[in-house]
Image 1 (cartoon, rainbow, N blue to C red):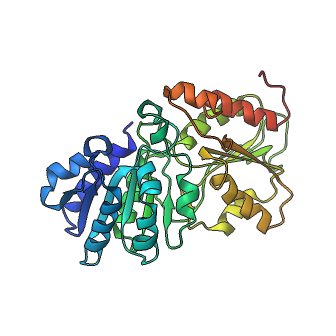
Image 2 (cartoon, helix red, strand yellow):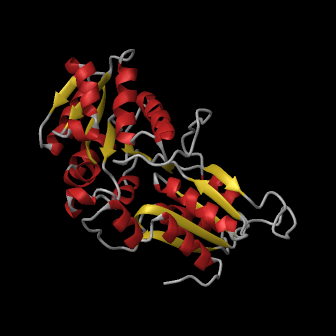
Length: 326
């Protein structure tokens, strides 16, 4: 397993060997975001802007007007909050081909302090017109997204986690922008005394690295005898809503799971699709319940905010009506 930030540094370094348009503008965090890998290989195309995120965006925009394809390298919280005005005005409104490589996103940055956690970035970025918003599940998907983004002619926000997670995909995976990914559907076959084709007991939708933990949680729920359909959304925006609806159609219970505030993130994306088709499904959002997080170790934070493997499994079981220990 490799951390997504390391995948970004390695993949971009490789791509830059044959694409001299690729440049990186860093906010004095190269050894954390792994932009240092790119800097060592391509020092003539690496700009150290210092702790000046607003200026970083201006520099990247200026370079994009000269034919370069710049990547911004910093913690997600600085790109989506401190530099938001510049991202909005210079990148989103002009459709500039600037890529925001947002490292250390989500809940699991508590060791750096709660000020550095970014649990509202998806809602902020998806609200910006022209912005593509990507949240990879693991290192394989991260690499595929980076390659896609390198050729995309427009703004991209790429949500990267600090730490490695268990693999979800193998080398056969092919990323398609906007497409939901069906990871499993145990309702397709017979089992547990039920006929094939009767549909899942619950449909679970997840995104980003939380998908890796959700895979494990669903394995535990299926061991109880339940049929579960699991959908991963790698693209928050743009989204092929018709393709997602095909996977949601007929579901009585839908659970969304995200390492993000439940306001404005994945849950609201799925809610809009269900509402648009007048679905009678009941939606349950698992994530931070409109609250700020706190400093602390990863395992503690995941458990406290209901995102550990065990807590997600418990929440799904509760939706299915089983008695769950408090």
